[in-house]
Length: 490
Ligand code: RVP
Image 1 (cartoon, rainbow, N blue to C red):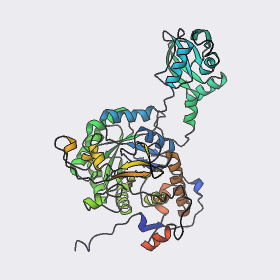
Image 2: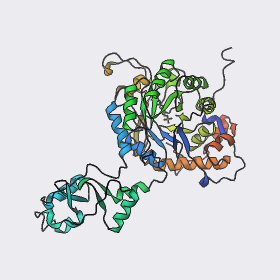
Image 3: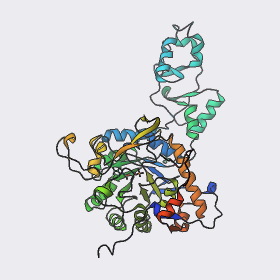
Image 4: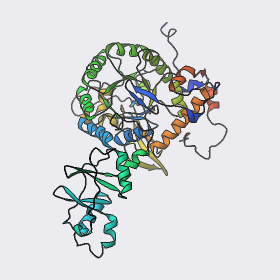
């Protein structure tokens, strides 16, 4: 009887979206969405809190593209706080630890400083006051003849400076008007930093970027289910969203802990992972949370469904949670199992506000780790947080993610992994991967007649398919000779 009553569970390959009447062009589609109660992102993609996926570099790239990165927690609190701060301060226009030279230094010394610090100009500072500026352009012609002479003799004395309150636009105007590349920032006659045109222009190159009220990139960070100390430190460091990161969040002890965390932080709080409407119901009624992460076992590196025999196929899981969450205005992130842009479209169509991707972002330039070459092809490491490597490396975050007891030193711990370790093909920079993913999603929304995410929830219709339907869907009856950027064959 238990089996007769069992519901069916479906995933990405069990359905296709049905094309419907549409006057929507992909280029006109709006992909803005809620990632948590109080934060919007411009593309519905979040990178996983995994030690081979998201540290500061990935989080910056995701925010620049309009998505979000969740900094993993397989490191000390101090290290994770530093990663959050790197993201928050990555675009600070004023470089505070400004490198300077003195008027009494030799040209040779000034040149060494520029080489070592990789800058092309230096403010000349005497007792904290800017008395000049010297650039590579000034130095180059005299390096052979006058290297021993003093900076004082060759520096430009008329220095254009700005105040701390100068806006990026004003700074750009001032720099152009005066034909200078860098502007020392001065307060009470003393140098407190420097702004370069290059930094201002770089900022303008990402029109889709997601920022907080102060113009800084949005960033999220993971904490353990009971790690209030970490949550509070991340909150203090400026994380906009904190994600409780655990393999099974439907537990009274975790709901209690989430309630307490929420009361102690300003950031939004995401709770996950869950895979059922009942879990969503229980968590919402026990804690005032700001978002759910859905997915038990769909991850490409995950073995939970095999080792524990537990899970819910991902489309059914998203749909079950979204039905409950939507009634309470709680956004849902569909986490894991996405391989193609079509999967992103299906996850959203069934009710997700956004998706979380591990494998799709692992192997990019911005993911942690080095490129390795095997059989002439480039790869990067990708591993589950429940894999032996991740559980015994870093701060051992994987052990409490999977409720494993560790007695004594980690290296002697007996662990039951729920994930594997491997490599994925090197994919180049995040922006290229995102371009393809969003191109596919927008195409899908065009086919479905949806001009934004909430229309996708309302309008998209599914057709149930068979294995032969899926076989027909993939390229067939040819040997692919030219790999597409959005359809990898290895
Ligand atoms: P995927 O994108 O399919 O690679 O899945 C990534 C997701 O898998 C993560 O966001 C996380 O929810 C889950 N994960 C991470 N580690 C493990 C594991 O070791 N089982 N699973």
